Image 1 (tube, rainbow, N blue to C red):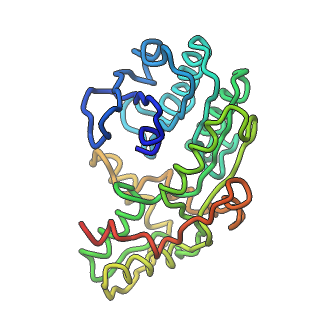
Image 2 (cartoon, rainbow, N blue to C red):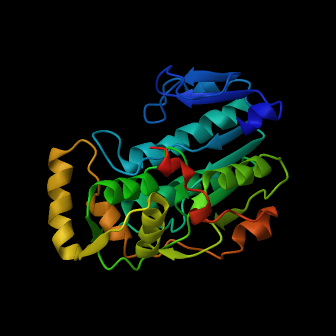
Length: 277
């Protein structure tokens, strides 16, 4: 909506023609980054690209390697053929060449595809993103609403730096300028480091719920997660996600202000969307 309001013509790549909640004036192009189908047609006439496609759990042919790494390679190739002037890729804090963490390794491989492309580019590495329709904070809200005793995987001390989606959009729009942050890899996050337990407390307060936490050792959670992966199409937690709980997901609390000149919003100040559900 921000780009449309600014007078830009916007085309969105989607696997189907369903428009979801897209604003008026947004064109939908059908395509698939895993197969590459429709990408040349979708990229025709496009000057600037924001590449957001990612998955947080693997299902069938939707693997991290296929959707994140190889998918990005296909999007980059189509962008080069189309003569795109600026390519902005949204990666993740912690992207690394480490097979222990397949999601983060796929993000790192995707970054390499972008940096080696020869395109003018910027790579953003956000911490967890929250806002209307997010998975992470809405999942916490669901646990708080319906469970008098809220389960927590591990000790709850892993640190995150949640960034509001509107602040992320501000950063993305700024990066679309051909000369802005060209060739840079920028880690970004909100204005505070919060542990998992602290985020859960903020969600409880926002919903007006008094709940106890039950910390479940990761050694117990891993076999449970494996069973859920076998029997559920979208398990609430995966073994990959449990592994990543060993890693803090933070950068400098002033990262967004330094790079983009804005003061990002706090998690506690922007949770109206979970109260409306």
